[in-house]
Image 1: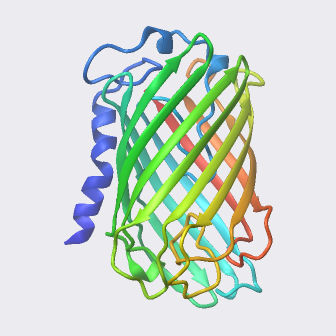
Image 2: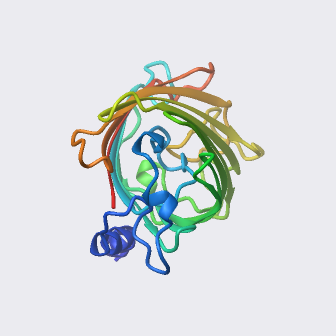
Image 3: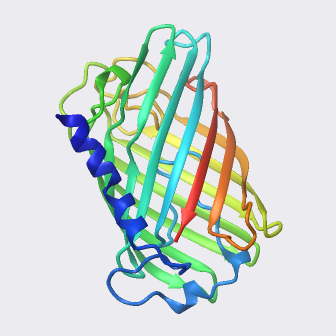
Length: 299
């Protein structure tokens, strides 16, 4: 009975967003009026949402959008999993309640593991929360937001899911006409039962930069950091980064290079995004490389 519940919760925001679609850049506003400054912002000032680490790379803007994404993750042959791949397919949704408050459904989907030790597929945990864009300055292109969410332990343990946590985050975004910078800090506090492979509280950070090269393309750079805050119950000496919580391991920093294509110039809120990601740190044996692709439609 858990599968229908998970699917209905994961699609709730998607259905609400699609039923309320509007051509406002600020997003569908259910309570109140859209921010005129957001609706009239020049398209070259619009940031590219974070591509890599899609569960946690949350920007400061309040929009209504749907993001369909796929990630292909390579495990090194010398690693503890004996090489192989992990693949994730998921749908994220965001729904603007006001011009400063947003519902964020940030984690769901299905994971496929094909490694030397594990050949399984199953549902991911479900994560959702609220974001408050407490600072909106479109004239100076500066925005800041805070958010809180909860990850329900409804995923399948066969794909190393079924962990619960409370998430708090803060984000800053600053534009310089066509060039845009942003950053997010995430704190994840574990609330579930002890796991055979270990659990830990975690700190994750993301830095993103993009440049509006023309109406159809923006190059993108993303940096991501993953850090276990307590390793007292560490069972395996490596990190699960953003794929899973394994209780400890080395700090991991990755870099992602990619871009956003806007294939229809008259529809700038439709984007196709991609990034190739590789670690900058040594010692973690779960990260070989990763490709992330997403299709984003903002209303």
